[in-house]
Amino acid sequence: MKKILVSNKVYYVGVNDRKKSLFENNWPLPNGVSYNSYVIADEKCALIDTLEFGSKDDYLEEIGEILQGRQLDYLIVNHMEPDHSSMIGWIQKMYPNVKIVANSKAFKMLQSYYGIGQDHIHEVKDGDTLDLGYHKLNFVMTPWVHWPETMITYDTTDSILFSCDAFGSFGTLDGGIFDDEINFGFYEDEMRRYYSNIVGKYSHMVQKAFAKLESFKINFICPSHGPVWRKDPQKAISLYDKWSKHESDEGVVIAFASMYGNTEKMADYLARLISEQGVKNIRIYDVSKTHVSFILNDIWKYKSVVLGSSAYNAGMHPMMQHLCNELEVLNPKDKNYALFGSFSWSGGGVKTLVPFSEKMSWKMVAPPVEIMGSPKIEEMSGFEEIAKNII
Ligand SMILES: Cc1cc2nc3c(=O)[nH]c(=O)nc-3n(C[C@H](O)[C@H](O)[C@H](O)COP(=O)(O)O)c2cc1C
Ligand SMILES: [Fe+2]
Ligand SMILES: [Fe+2]
Image 1 (cartoon, rainbow, N blue to C red):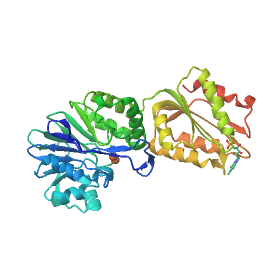
Image 2: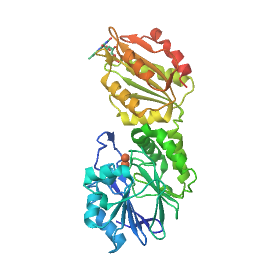
Image 3: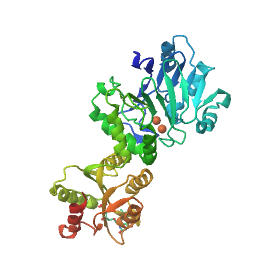
Image 4: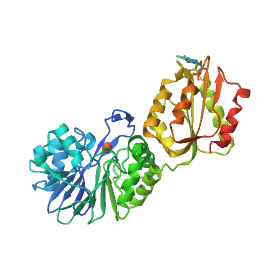
């Protein structure tokens, strides 16, 4: 692999994973994902995070080529999720004297996953520094962005933020590694999908991390997934700030579950009414067809959400239940919303969507519309109020 220099003595040694179909065995990867790792070849040499085990055959050789026979002094573990940590054992085998730089919350995990004892660990606390020669590193504890032990490593010399999952994105790096080498339009969507699916639940902790980093000068952001930012890191920061504050764009996501098309007809009817109000961003999703990952991404993006379900065994349809479960866990806030559905006897769809929606910090814009059997236009007048108020 061609050596990729990020900054003075800092090399990118990441890999593209195009084989894995589901990240965390849950989130689809139609465009793959990259695991990014970085070598700082200074007076002292450090590796920042590793890769998912098995994702790169020649990872150790590549590190060896950069170090040119020198020892690896430090392995900095920002985050213990195995997509970044599962090569730690191999690094240790190759460099038995390497010191693992980690915070105390990572200790037990290092022990339980990889059998690494305290004598191999160089403990760091919030604000601690590590002098590599030219580069001087500073450790910032950022718990819950994405796990409790997560931290960020900041290089004060070249103003580089090694941010791990923060500012990460789905999508492989197809030639272009840096923000000025790629068409960001594609990555913005994959970055928000990564945010909403993986990090969004911890948005308040992202805001806390931002408060800590406020006074830091940032010339580079080197995340552990997706593009490296060197031209416009402020863009990544402002997107993350927006998403973690639950700020959204004007638009409506209508997600429906329908077995025989009745609830779907209601969705189409409502969408037309909303369009007549001049709204341009309207996305209709069949929850049985589109993976919840993509629906969540658009719900994070847009201000308004309408959920519709046919009644199913006295509840909502199981695929709508899946979306609602994920919404409850990931907790996108500040939405306008409305509900609808079709039924045949005593209902269940709207009946169970209502208590779900009351648990969310959302604002209902009009009463739910519920129709028995096939919807007739005269039965759908309730949608007019929804269409008027949903934006
Ligand atoms: C497996 C199954 C379970 C159902 N359970 C209920 C129910 O608990 N309450 C109810 O009122 N209707 C129930 N229905 C009827 C449907 O909700 C009704 O046919 C509805 O119009 C279907 O809307 P759809 O065409 O959007 O799927 C059930 C239908 C099926 C196939
Ligand atoms: Fe993670
Ligand atoms: Fe990750």
